[in-house]
Image (tube, rainbow, N blue to C red; front, top):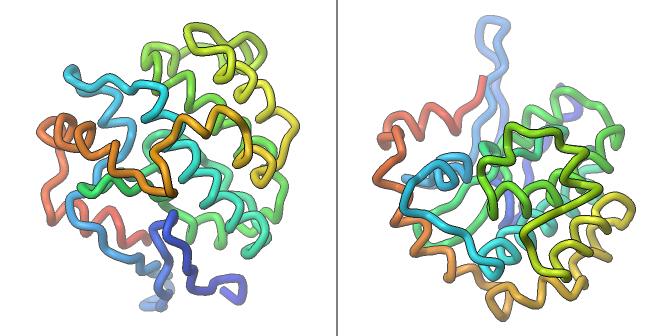
Length: 206
């Protein structure tokens, strides 16, 4: 429990605190009403991510990962679409950082975290690829721009702060904003199984 601490980053579902009750640890997170995960967005039939949308998502995730790796000195270990939340204002946040703090794996999965951002480019562009071999797409990305392909390839070796300067992310919404993702949220939220009650339960992890 000594490893647990509150987090403070706009690209995370922040851990507020932890308390113990009857030998169970309860992790308390900031509350983001009606947020949906990107897995839901990808599965929605009316949703299509363009490269501006994808670059905007990747920028937010990389900023959150940089904080996790450098400030918390841990790896997340589970950077997948269902752990990336999209809110109604278009903001993007990494969820479940408290679980990573509990597992206390240090930076063991740092490279996998970053590679999974590259995979996210592929999965958001072509959702059917989620079930395919990750190595196929990391080493031979298809159906994206040349800049996107180079970005995916760079996730195999470059750190977050270098990737944040990559040409591909210049496609993202200007000034660090993510308002361009709002239409995706509203197209996808109708297919979300979440009610306010379910969202609350999801964000208070045990």
